[in-house]
Amino acid sequence: MADTADSVRQAPDVTQVVEAALRDSGAEWESPGPGRYVVSLPGTRKLSTTCSLVVGRHALSVNAFVIRRPDENHAGVHRWLLERNTRLYGVAYAVDGHGDVYLTGRLPLAVITAEEIDRLLGVVLENADGPFNTLLELGFASAIRREYEWRVSRGESTRNLDAFSRLTRPSSDAPPADDGP
Image 1: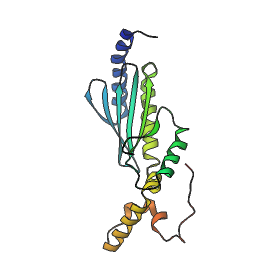
Image 2: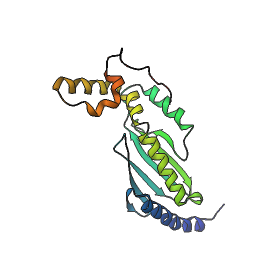
Image 3: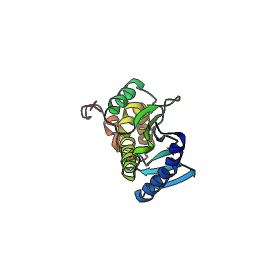
Image 4: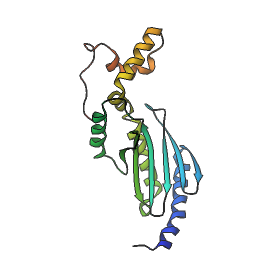
């Protein structure tokens, strides 16, 4: 096992690697303190995903908010997340004390390279942005339907709800549900 001095010496090297990788990534980022980074990953379904990277004494931790606590179907959402966890690299879905969903992970400092940072940020973006609409459908279907009905009743645009048309159109027109992760 490495002594404390070796671990402390590794952290500055890792911060240099992280900062170089973030500069090369093209993503917006800031460093609110030594070894702490906040990265904004642009999405296609979710406007952006905020990802926190923290260089610790022994590991790099990553945290990214995915969705707030689902309004409904908690068991279905949690099952979907757990099934998806089996295929993730470097991170896993987690639920905080409020029920909000995050991607979280910890990697040993010894494996941190620019390529590893790129891979980690890619996995975060893919798994926060990619399934965003699915998670909203699973955990917020009633709210989506109410929002759609409210907009229609007021003559407002429903264009940004088009991704949820299987929830908002009459059930006879809806395609069969895809229950898989």
